[in-house]
Image (cartoon, rainbow, N blue to C red; front, top):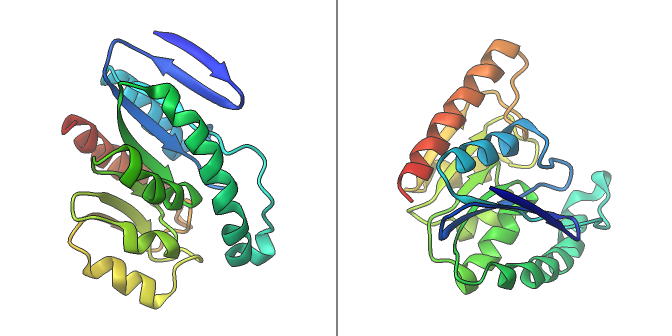
Length: 194
């Protein structure tokens, strides 16, 4: 395996035509458990992995809705500049939070494959397809009751983590650990189907 870094991105190259593109959240980066797990599993499956960084974005935690609107065009532009470097690879998205919005917007132009959305934002919900997988918590501060109802009614494969927050963490550590194991198992199934 070769590991190359360019700009703020890291590309793990293996002998595979399949490339898992990891898209982070605004504050949830590649060193955090869900994305670290995704990278590890994808590499164990023999796939290439691109950690697609958006770089510094002008977001304000106190005004997330407005921040997302400001950040999407910039993040999309940065992603669109990197993905052509993956020429010849089949792209599969695993995205977290803000990254789910970008994955949903990128998919029509560069991948027709199912995606794995970790704690999607409200803006992602209309872009979720029946073939996608979604892991989310009903204690996620970025999803209101209507959003949760919308997700529950979708026919995609869902992993609901009761009481989990936007990082799929639960107030009880043992429950958080169980949720991470369940997400890992769902990611394994997702990768097995590629």
